[in-house]
Amino acid sequence: MQEKTFDVIVIGAGAAGLMAAWEIARTGRTVAVLEARARAGGRTHTITDPAFDLPVELGAEFIHGRLEPTLTLLDKAGIKYYPVGGESWQNKDGKLQEQDDMIEDFSALEKKFGEVKEDISVADFIDRHLQDPGFDELRFTLRNYVEGYYAADAGRASTFALRQELTEGEHEQYRIEGGYVKLFDYIESECTRHGVTFFFAQPVEEVSWSSGTVEILSAGKRFRASKAMITVPVGVLQQEKIRFTPTLPDRLEAARRLGFGPVIKTILQFDEPFWEKKEYTQGQDLRKAGFIFSQALVPTWWTYRPKQSAMLTGWSAGPHARDLSGRTNVEIRDAAIDSLSRIFSIDEAELHYRLRGWHVANWLDDPYSCGAYSYEVVGGAEAIQALKQPVEDTLFFAGEGLYEGPEIGTVNAGFVTGRDAAYNLVASFKK
Image (cartoon, rainbow, N blue to C red; front, side, top):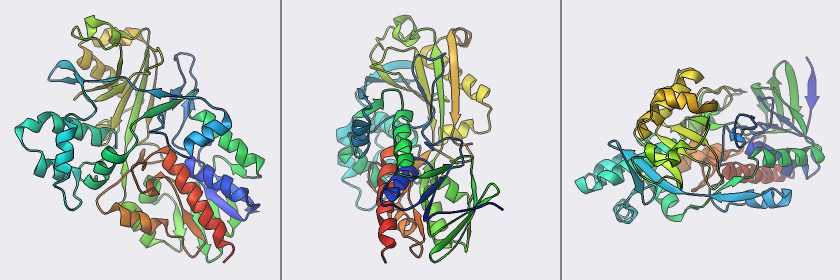
């Protein structure tokens, strides 16, 4: 069996893996990156389709604030980015109406947050603190936010983390001109320039290790190194897609305690932005709409403002994604069309006639992610700390799910944890 030897092997070429490989290689160590997919980027995946007005983001799409190191990397690479926004609208009880924000009555919510003295799940918070009839809108928009934006199970999601994100987190959002692929191509090229060797289409099957030695079995090849950095998504660890010999019961138990949510994205290209015509919007002016929320099967939609485009993205996360689980891509597309039909009171046949292109990205069924991204759960900080601890200075873990703070679940969180774990790994060579 073919065997290759390096100082460090990084498993996964997503945000954390690429950043870790880059940082380690800059110290002169030999680094190999094993990636199950045929490309770098992980859960970011930009495609160009001539049927669409703009590049299509099947995975991560936004930069959630003025985040470092993402913005510095973009500036260094000379890649442009721009703010996104627009009005928020909802269809509730068959009526289209503008929302002041993604969460209604935020001042009342802040006061209720102050009543919580120990962390509880968001579902418990709603049941215990938001049952007054006057909080109907707040309950609706808050649950939509947690299940949609977080892709979370409200019965597990942390109220303390939600409070921190809403009161301290960044609220500006940006898109990258040309898509995330521009940034990941830049980082991959920097890795290659510093001597990193990439092995694509190499799903890792087993990691055998002892102190100071790692042997990895992947698609009929063996790789050896002194240390390994594991940057696969939390969902892959939770489902034990990779065997560890000897086993790592404490680390895998910690992974199972973390929150990791499913997402299905449906991107549709129409012949024109029909939602800007009052005949389809109950006379309302949605020309500046950025986000549209509803109780349909595909409940959340966004436009591409400030770009002028006839594209819409349907977002099904958390329990909404699970409701679509097991359907084919065509069936998911049709569910999305049905949802738009209900939101705008347009005949489905007309929407199908207007449709010029479509893509479905089902991250729930993706074998190399087993879901979309992480969210903080009650007691999650202790699980993160347990998983982040190196195993005998031989196995190191990184990824967006190991970030502590409002940026958990973001590409930036992957960059930060990959960089920090790389520093720890490099320092361990000196021990």
